Image (tube, rainbow, N blue to C red; front, side, top):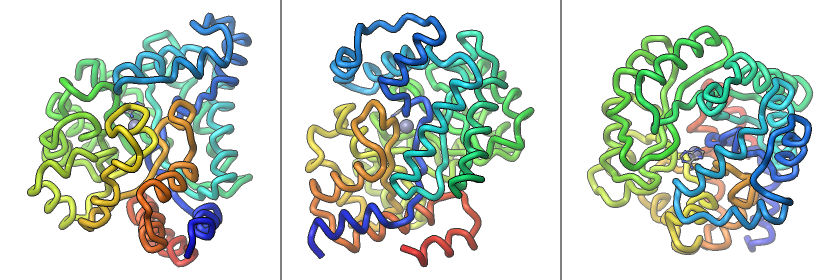
Length: 332
Ligand code: ADE
Ligand code: ZN
């Protein structure tokens, strides 16, 4: 099969997205519109200036701009519109199931109530479920640069919305904020029936992946690309088929790898790891899910079989029930 046909296959196949920060879908145009509507100053004169600023050196330099951009989100309607815009992208990319992160502490620290954030996101996803047939799970991420006490307070608020929030995750500045810092928090979250995941091994060492598995009881590792530095870890991830939600365009923008053709995703596939492709923060990193799949296929010369494996893995790695997983996989 040639690349043109593989691209058609990518576009047409049903797929799941498992690593997507809803705040990372805030397009510059929407940032300006919301800034104006809510009377919030943005540190950019125009959209071109915004796009120029999206030139990152590492995770930290991205997060600074990302948290700044989130300040235009004030009302429930803003969170609703943000999420609805992503649901329409799902339709475009044939994403039939999405597991979506949100970062409440980014908003509660600015005086926005937890209820406003979760209700806006949830109502948009329910509308997407009804009108677009998109199934979804919501995963609340703790900001790991904050302390565990702050995170316990936000967990209390999540418990009040247990009907809407499926799991908890861990994101933000990785280096210097190891998973072990949140061991008690994740134990408590597990006792309250939240499924757990964590960003680990994006910039941080393989040790952080071990900690996420052993101390936070995670069912999935977000990113995990640093795992190849540790053979024992690769064996464990491969034996247990622990899903890794890899985000290739994000990894290039944040300089984890210099170029897409130097990305280690093909090596991960060859080692029989349970890898999936995702978009992370598509408004900041230059592409939604299909773009990630298409560019990665071309750069790494992935075969039709590799792509099929990645799409099947997206469902196998999801938190859908076994029946739904099977149903989608047979359609690929
Ligand atoms: N928050 C949003 N995107 C992130 C990423 N790629 N890593 C860590 N925290 C994030
Ligand atoms: Zn992420």
